[in-house]
Each structure stands twice: as structure tokens, then as C-alpha cells.
Amino acid sequence: MNEIAINSWAGVRAELLRRITERIWKPGETIPGEEQLAREFGCARATVNRAMRELAEAGLIERRRRAGSRVRVSPDRRAVLRIPVIRLEVEGRGLGYRHRLIEQETAMAPLAVAARLGIEPGSRLTHLRAVHLGDGRPFACEDRWLNAAAVPDFSQVDFNAISINEWLVLNAPFTEGDITLSAAAAGPREAECLGIAAGAPVFVVERTTWNRGEPITAVRLTYPPGYSMTTRL
Amino acid sequence: MNEIAINSWAGVRAELLRRITERIWKPGETIPGEEQLAREFGCARATVNRAMRELAEAGLIERRRRAGSRVRVSPDRRAVLRIPVIRLEVEGRGLGYRHRLIEQETAMAPLAVAARLGIEPGSRLTHLRAVHLGDGRPFACEDRWLNAAAVPDFSQVDFNAISINEWLVLNAPFTEGDITLSAAAAGPREAECLGIAAGAPVFVVERTTWNRGEPITAVRLTYPPGYSMTTRL
DNA sequence: AAGTGGTCTAGACCACTCC
DNA sequence: GAGTGGTCTAGACCACTTA
Image (tube, rainbow over all chains, first blue to last red; front, side, top):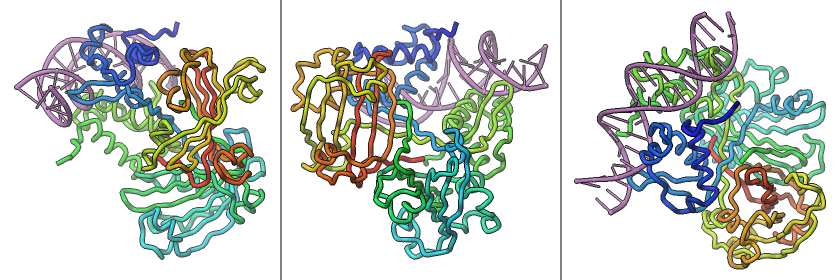
């Protein structure tokens, strides 16, 4: 048996979820307090707290001290996106992984990149371009600006042996980051890199990371038509 | 002062995170057990447990009974996407919201839609098409297949007054769902709906939802060039 | 001022796995 | 079998917010 006891936190969560989805507690309504629910379910308040905290994190209820917990009017659900290393993403699809470094140079950061990283326009950064291959076919195109000064041992690495993507994940930790998803028309270099027609629709993932406020890297990953990211809601 | 005490769960998490990002505990290494850390930080084991559970949810460590906790070799970080009602998404950008129903009919579900929902090919569903406007300009194009039988009161609703999107959020709860993000070339109908050229790159969000196994709806939302989703990492 | 959620504790038992 | 994390409890105090 893999039954979930009703007085376990998962059981309480399931029952609260049922009351919300079946409109026993309607959107906007206040739901009973933790203490009252603990009495009802015959469990400790901490158990109810754990269940309600998870529902709040999932966007289903709103909690405020003194005011109590309410069913959210607009659920505003949250989905968790997993951001793997590209090699694992490729291998996870059953493809053999390879990558190829196209270009490595030191250059002035474009305005948009400087703005994203929050650095002086005109700063010199390392610029890298590479393509990730799945079974020999282009899987993603990588265009990266890197603050090499913030990454020790960087100059000694051979990015033909390990991908920049993976090396940085292992060697350039970050404390803050943001990620933007969008669609765009493939630029000429991206099109060439991916082996598609210029102007074809590509899926774009832009990631920017800092380590305790110090800018690390800004990367644009471009995926050819047919690529998609899926997650549970 | 908004200091976080080191023996609070947030303080413990911050300190563990520091040891991971500064490579004091290297990728792949086993880190001390909860009991030992509790002694070190002078707090209860439950407090350490809460901190480590959050790090595990963020993808930074792996936990296994008996084997202990390890720093993940490939962080595999997770980002949380918020999925708001489109009206709120539009208004959140400071635009005035309107929507327009383009088409409503009963028709046989296309094969792809039937497959996504897990229903018999050829089943008859309600098909709706609408456009969401921000300050009068197309913001998103909605193409939805709906299992009207699963949604009571559906036939009495005037979707010129409230958008399908919002009405369903309020009236058609679901227990499971998935969401797929991709880029595509605008089809002729989408292009017309969004007022862009056919073939232009569009950002596509496809959502499918069930309520305790019963299919509810499959929707394809298409956003014109320039749209993006952003989140913290 | 008072009531709610947020957190912490010390202890306990259980479930899972690795040895 | 033994050691780790997973969960639960009963109680306590605190922080925040709103009445």
C-alpha cells in the first residue's frame, strides 16, 4: 500500500487542495486557521503549516499574518523549469553529444550585454561562440560574454575538450541569475551555426549571472525550430 | 536591522550555500549529516532539515537516506515560472486589457489535440479562438479546445464579456497540467490574429489540463515577436 | 491589543538503503 | 543491521498586521 495518511502533511495538502478545486472553499474566501485545521485533522499545527506553505508556494492560496489564509482569486500557478547542462539535455534525448568552439576573442561588450550585466559600456570581456551538437546535428548555438577576471584558471582551459557551458557550471558558481525566454528570427550567424535558413524562428534562452554582485556571464542560447521545453504545472 | 541569525533556517541555508559556491564542499562530495550540522550551528535538527530541503529543491544538493547528502555534480538549477491570467499579464505591463472572441464552434478535435488530451480521435469538442489586446494592439492569440461536458454552466457564458482564459481559471479547476514552451513560425490565422506577417517568429505556450484524469482543455497561446518571459534563477 | 502565521526546539519513530 | 534523512508532535515564542 502506498496510501497517504490524512494526518500526514501530504494528506492534509491533498484534502485542502480538494476543497479548493471543488469550490468548497471559493476563490477569495478565507479558509480556517492552522490551529483549527490541526484539530480537525488530528495532527500538529506544524503539519498543517507544512501543507499550507506548499499550497502558498504553488500559488493556490495567499497567507498573511493576522489576516489568515485565502484562496487566491486568480490561481497564478507556478511551474518549475529545470535548467540542465546542455550536454545532459542532449544525452537525455538519447543523442550523442559533441560541441565545437567557433570563436574566442576579447572585445568590447555590446551595449545590450553591458546593460544586462550592469557594467560600464565599453568594458572589455571575453566573447565566445560555440555550437552544441546532438548526433552530429546542431542542437543549440551559444553566444557568450564572460567576465574572465571573475573566473580563475580560465585562460588555461581548452574549450575544445570541455564545453564552456559545462566548464562554467562546474567552475564559476553564481549566487544570483535571471533567465529570459523568447522567440526570435535567426540572425545570419545563428542560422549558419544551426544550419537553418536566416529568419527561421528560433527559441532563445538568455541567462545572466552574478556572484555576490560581481557580474560573471551573459549567454544567449539559440535552439532551432522543433525545440521545446516542457514541464508539469 | 534585518540580519538573519545564523541559527535560523535561512541563516543555515545561506551558510551551506556559501560553502557550496565557494567550493569548500566540492561537487560530488558528501556533506555532513543533519545532526552534526545542528550541533555545529547550535540549532535543532529540524532547522537544518528545512535548510537542506530547500537546497535540494533548488537543485544544489542531492539527498538520500543512509547515504547522506552530496553536492550535485551538475547543479541543474530550477527556475520558477509564474503563469498568470492573461488579463493580469497585460495590465501588469501597464496596458489596458480587452479581448475579442473570433470564433466558437463544436468540431472534431484534431489528432494532435486528441493525443495531448488523451481522448479518442474524432471526439467532438468546443473550439474557441480569441485575441487578447493590450492598449488595443494584439498581445496574444488564443486557440483552445475545450471539453465542455466537464465544465458546468459553460453554455450560458458570454465570452464577449469575460475572456475564456479568465472564466476557465475561475470556473474550471484542474488537478494536473503540463505546459510546453517553443518558438514557431506564425501560421496564416495566427498572423492575421496578431497583425503580423505569416512566418514571423512567435513564442508559443501550449497548456493541457485535466481534473482528476478527466481532460479539460488544451490551449495554444501565441505571442508576437518582442514578447518574453523572465524569471530569477 | 490581539490574533494569525512563521519559526524553533527536543524528542521520537519511521522508511529507506547501503553495508 | 545500522545510519541517514523524512516526518510528526506538543509546546513555545516571535513577527507581523489589522482591527
